Length: 463
Image 1 (cartoon, one colour):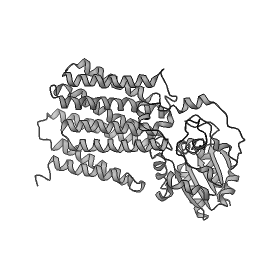
Image 2 (cartoon, one colour):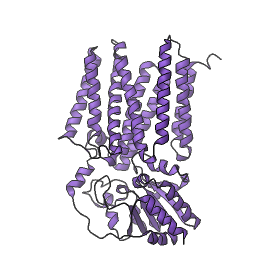
Image 3 (cartoon, one colour):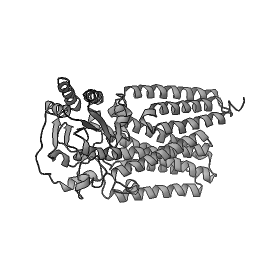
Image 4 (tube, one colour):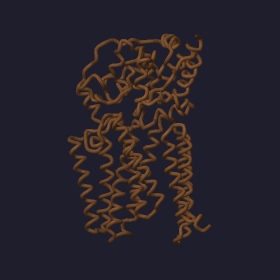
């Protein structure tokens, strides 16, 4: 009975819930339940740490911990309840940044307690550097997603500058570990240098690359947390950090594959250079654009057998996820086969479109990943692209000079008819024109996605 209520056993249960929760997050149908299971495990670990800790702790510490938990819970609850689906990537960036900041603060607080223990100092310095980079980088990512920093900022020779700066930080950190220095000045210099590097690392990156950035910074935070768990000998913190770090790394590699960009290019190379490269080419695509009305699109869909919907960030911005689900249900009531084609980096974070559509209770089986849906476009009567741009641009196949050349895309150009809903002809985040707009099979349905879809649904109901 004493073992059942031991802290080690509580940590074991919490670790199992992390693994189980992460496993369930791998599928949209079980993701919600997995998130709740992992959260329950985290709550159990926190309660166990507070009430089953064996050392002597002053009463004031428990009061401060309680106040901190209360404030954090209230703020987190209020923010999460109010945040819109379009703002979810920004919220993820903030939460991830807070995790990095916590890891960095552990290093600042514990450094002087472990002077002389080289392994512990190495762990502290590593965790502080990674956590600081994750925090400042996540804040810049939030500002970019929020529109505060809507253009990449590149210093001259920024690749060389960033890489030299990183080497300098690592070298200075190694000096502190092996010299046995206990200088607070050196510690804070390293801390602020790591913060500066996080800013320089993310600042040049364009908005189209944010899904990769978010997953990469997430892996950084997990790694920093794992160092904290190793320092304290805290198995649940170590397990959680390893899981977050490894899952973030795997997701980063998957995102890199989807963007046709090697990981080495993400860390050291010309990450996010698409916009500048596109601007330098500056060429215009020839051809004319064919515009369609909601009535035209409704007639085309009404006499179709198969329709595939391609959701993008424009759908999220217009908050049109509910009306797109109504369109899907209306088409199905007419005997039309309807699916959603999901590109891995559509939106502003990994899985953004899955989360957006899950909010409206879209059947998970209708969300088809890129590799599985691409062969189906040839037999599709109508492809309806809502707010997506770069992920359907045939230049990725056809134009070797294009900055997105080689990027896997949704092959919507193979469908019999293509309808694209956009506010205007403005290019996507890659900053290049879309060849698909000028395709003879393409018709443009201009306007806000929610307004256009509402008109389309109304027209279909009258048929």
